[in-house]
Image 1 (tube, rainbow, N blue to C red):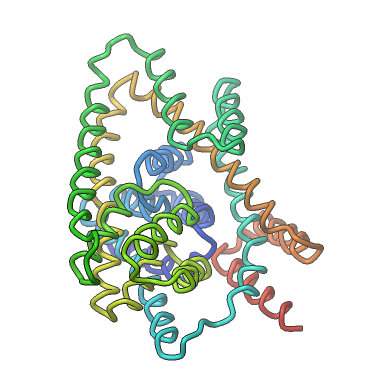
Image 2 (spheres, rainbow, N blue to C red):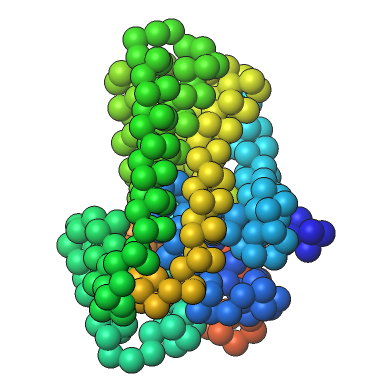
Length: 377
């Protein structure tokens, strides 16, 4: 348990760069250095987090904590990864409320993104070598990457190859019962969160409605921080009128350049709306569904390994998940590589990672510092 606390508390303070970078850092720390899981098991867990709603890197941390220290590790790993970011974002929200402005962020992101690109690229290369063995999984991964870049739903790209591969692995349809049960449970949780959140419609700000708004978002959100922005704009700006659009954009910016989960955007918004109580309530609301879904999928994953059909399903999902990670890498490249400085920073970072095996968290922090300095000259 001390090891779980140490690892995820440190990642919570140093894991900059968003979910793809967090995933790469966890692989570096827990597959390469500590050997908690193999590359194959890591991709399996990564794929499962893509199948359930919520923040992928946080759910991956929760899965890994469960693998290392059981049910207590599940809760401790998640809390240790979330809380440092929540405290940092809460402090920045206090500055924002007191002084009406945020520290400079553009320079930090300018230098951070090329390094994140290198970190994700190095991790993806290692995972591909370990997992994509044979022509079929390679074709699935390439197809998923291409279709993702064309805008096809990530959830469809994960489920389709998994279902086809699983059905080809076994003719016994009864083995799919656990998957049906999981689907019904997830649907029930969705319905409950929507029903409870409905009580917030048309009412003034309060802690209870705030909690249910973020509980709903944490229960149904798939995708990136841009999807989170869309959900929060619809609920908090347009429907309820609790925030201005400028405040929402500031909250999302803080979530991007601080370490840990991007979903700590909720902490910032909660503090702006209701101080410390609002920050606590919003943070609990958006992250609690992740613990529920991981608890459910962890049990299902253990049973799945005993079934040929379920193993086939996971193989298809795993291959597609690596394809989606490749698509993220392409999108990051389009956004991050703007000029000679960012291209050079990405190449040097990749060389340092491959040659010296440095801790990627510090490399991302160094990139952010160089980016900030370059914009001040």
